Image (tube, rainbow, N blue to C red; front, top):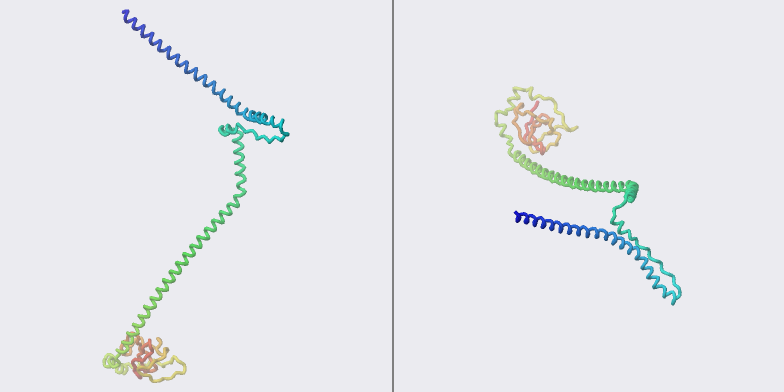
Length: 287
C-alpha cells in the first residue's frame, strides 16, 4: 500500500512541475509580444520626427557653411530655398479617399458628363455623314454589279439572237432549195392525164360554178396580157384575195409548198408565191 501511495504522489509532483514550466513559458511569450507592440508606435513617431527634422538639419548645415563666407567675402543673396517636401503625399496615396474627396470626384465627373452633350450633336452629324457615305458607296457597288449583269445579259441575248438569225437563214435557204426542187419536179402534163381532174367535162355539166363575176385588177389602168410559164408577176397579182382556196371545187389538183392557184382575169395560174414565177397556166378557165 505504501508503494502505491508513493507512486501516486510522485506522479502528481511531476505533473505539477510540468504545468508550472508551461505557465512560465507562456508568460514570457506574452511579455515579449506586449513589449514589441509598445516599441512599434515609438519607432513610427521617431521616424516621423526624423522626417520633419530633415529640412531643419539641412537649413542648419547651410547656415554653418554660409557663416565663414559672410566673414571673408561680401554678402551674397541667398538662393531661394526649395519648397519643403510634402511628407504626407505617400501616406495620402496609400490611404482611401475621404467622403469629401469622393464627393468632389463624383461632382467633377458629373460636370464632365454635362459638358459632353454640347459636342454630341456634332459627333452625331459626323457619324450620320459617315453612315451616308458608306451607304452611297454600297449603292455604287450595287449599281456597278447591276450594270455588269445587264451587260452580260445583253451579250447573252445578242448571241442568242445571232444564233437564231443564223438558224433562220439556214432554214430559209433550205426551204428555198426545197422549193426550187419542187418547182422543177412540178409536172404540168401529169395531172392533165388524170381523169379525176377533167375540169372541162365538169364545167360542161356545172356551168354556173365557173361563172364567178368580173375580175378587178389590183393595179389601176392595167389591162389583160396573156402570160405564160416562167413569167414573173408583180406581188399584188398573187395576193391572198386572188387565191383559189379550194382547187378541188373546180377540179384542179392540190398544191403544196410555195404554190398557189391564182385567178388572173379568166385564166388560172399556178404561181410560186415566194418568187412570183408562173409554173402552170390554164387559159379561159372561167366564163
